[in-house]
Amino acid sequence: MRIKIWGARGSIGTPERRNSRYGGNTPCVEIRLANGTLIVLDCGSGFRSLGKSLLREFVDHPIDGYIFLTHFHWDHIQGIPFFLPLYRKGDIFLFHAAERKGREIRAAIEGQMSSPYFPVRMDAMKARRHFFDLIHNPISIQGAIISAGPLYHPQGCVGYRVEADGATLTLATDTEPGSPVHDRSVRKLAEGADILIYDAQYTPEQLEGEKRGWGHSSWQEGVRIAQECGVKHLLLFHHDPDSDDAFIDGLVERARQEYPTVTAAAEGMKLDLAEGTILWDREIPAQNRRVHRRLHMELPIHVKWREADGQQLETEGVTRDLSKTGVYFFSPRELRPTEPMELDLHMPDEIPQAATPAHYRAEFVRSERLDGSFGAHPPKLGVAARFLDATSEAQGAAPLTRP
Image 1 (cartoon, one colour):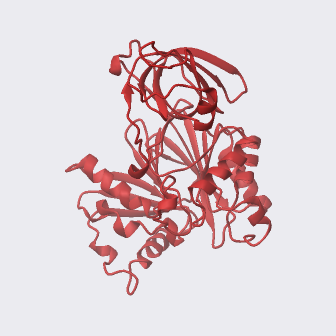
Image 2 (tube, helix red, strand yellow):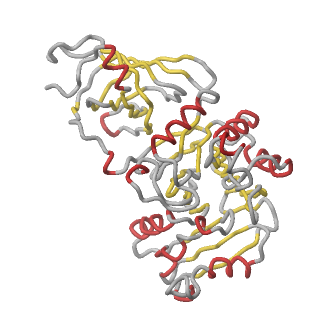
Image 3 (cartoon, helix red, strand yellow):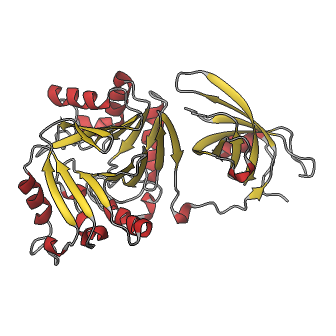
């Protein structure tokens, strides 16, 4: 099961530079099963970008997709009128929602496209569309078991649990703690999940004050659920419009002090849940891409890290690319670090003033399995890491952009 985040912002889109790393599009999560089945959770403004991507992928081939809506607030359906595959004859989309009849689901979606709110009516969409109420729970779709559970949110909302390909993903957004019935529902959905995508729009302090009753949660409640339910990784979601990148970084830091395996959802983030193993591929927006020169250098590297269970491990690897800000290296074993890694690079004598070994602390960015490409024999893991500047400078490590 592969996951891609197309929108992680809550309430309203925020196309602002200060939000460029985590993104400004409202909720949309794409799931691809091993058999190719397409499942989409929520249709916020990120749904538009997903549609364009699908057209590039399928070209003249029909697109079939299963769409599950948590609820009908605008930030979760506003991408539907701009989803281009819906206007293409031959495509088929099955919309699902809980506690609403098929006609009511259609009416709720079409309502935002009626006059005077939108100039194009839904009947302009040439794709075949079907609407289903999730009466029987759980349901089976092309090898995936999908369960829904009620969440505490004004006008109602549901969370989803998707079990497929030996892994489990839970989406619980637009939920506020405090209702015993709904709190039990969230925990049932999250039990033993590989990934819990959880509403963290507000801080704990805001929930205790002016945001009480608004229907959202915090990183602290997400951590509590993850600890109680044995969640492998917590992904903070539905970021507040006023929370910029730096503020969200701070929420992640606070959460990791209590639960090491926490990350904030970001547009373009990819997750590969292969039999319970989580592999990340975080795409950085263009304006934040590497600006330092990258050198192709194969050097011995010694790696130390800590697993989620607290076990300290180490391995020997080989670098492939180096820059002033980070490194890409091959590892003979999988890494699942829960805190910064310790890297020792054995620098060649040709680099002036280089310390050997050069010691760095680095933040894990992403990993990918290698099947023999890049000269990796036998198959290994490719790992990208970002140097933590303050530490590397303090350690006196040699700049890696020198010729």
